[in-house]
Image 1 (spheres, rainbow, N blue to C red):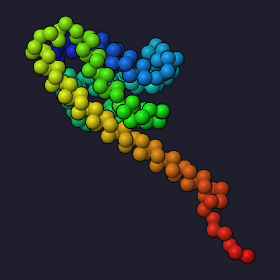
Image 2 (cartoon, helix red, strand yellow):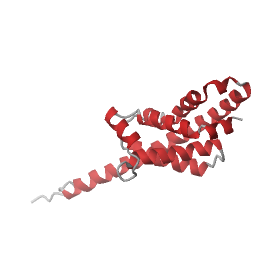
Image 3 (cartoon, helix red, strand yellow):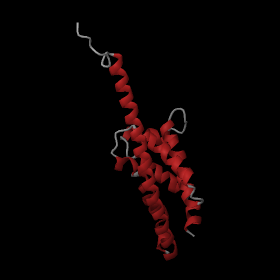
Image 4 (tube, rainbow, N blue to C red):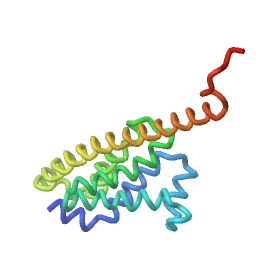
Length: 166
């Protein structure tokens, strides 16, 4: 029952979820992310919309761990290079709960739908844990790149040369 409701309101739930995610950015970015639909003019906004759609479809239908992990990795790779704490960076996963509750509203008064929602929210929580792991992997990769670059620059400017005593 919940699945069919979410399939009917997929666009509304997805739009709400995307809006909640992009609202973690400054106001001038929010407008740009939501209104520029061209993937070349707005690659971040288009990537967010595409990957959130994949995540929502995976939750509604077949919960393929590999597909979910890939979508989370793509979003988190973007958020890892931005100025977010780990909790802020992955909070977008939990915004899906808000989007669903707001879009389904009165339908959630049905006890059967509410039970199904609780089960779906557990799956969202699990997705949040995977998101945290992928975010941390992305941050680690970023830190390794920064360290390698620092080391390379240091060696280039003489930091790696040994002094000879003459």
